[in-house]
View 1 (cartoon, rainbow, N blue to C red):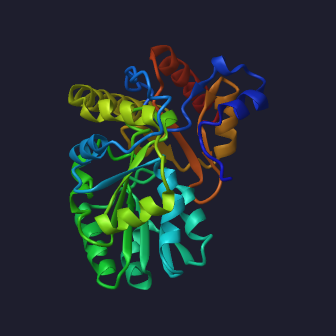
View 2 (cartoon, rainbow, N blue to C red; view 1 turned 180 degrees about the vertical axis):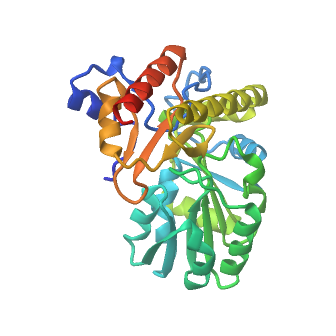
View 3 (cartoon, rainbow, N blue to C red; view 1 turned 30 degrees about the horizontal axis):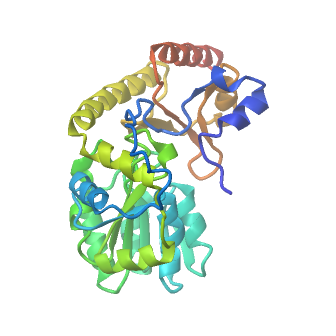
Length: 330
């Protein structure tokens, strides 16, 4: 399996520090998770029938016409390459590594193309995959540009797959409203903004015909009953959503300014910051020795990504670690 953030047990073992003594900034997941409500008494007993209210709530929240609940967007990322005959696929680079990994496993001719070169590459593929905003760099592509690419690809039976997992604080940029047209597929995650990664729930917005094929491939009971009930409450709680967006924008700005005060010019979104750190392994080790687990990228997106500290003492611990790093390297 590919390496991901959130591997705190690995950190605890490698640095001989108990789990409870770590600050995990490695995932970009909202540290202020949605307060999970109680589930119905039989939620853990019954087979999880698909609740139409959940899909309806998702359509309302994400602004899409049709959506399919899946066991995290990872399930869709793994399944989509199997719904097409082998063809030419371009995955924007760098981006979430699972996209290229799975498109490369099913006979497709895979190329990874830098974001700045995508416009010139659209005519050379049947499928284009982008993260918007990008994970891990935070790079963004204007909706107008994406829709133009989608139209070009759809004209020859192709797909534009847009992973909007970190898009909840940037809804004006979402393509959800346009997914009724063939060839445009948008992936959304409940785990990031709502801080409920353990729920393993995401949604796919696309033309109903494609969603039917995807549902048939994934099979029955893909999303647990308790997960459906929790997600329905979260998607309908507009008060919590509005307050949380404001909070995350404030904390995202604070994180960016904190890094800048230590000479680090970062990019990202409300949930994380990233920069191309020349001494990435050394920085990662420096933080780990102080009980802070950040995401190290060794290859295409060589650098460091870190998410929001969960509480004020963690902010102070991060600031002290950054100041120490700055003193040691200037």
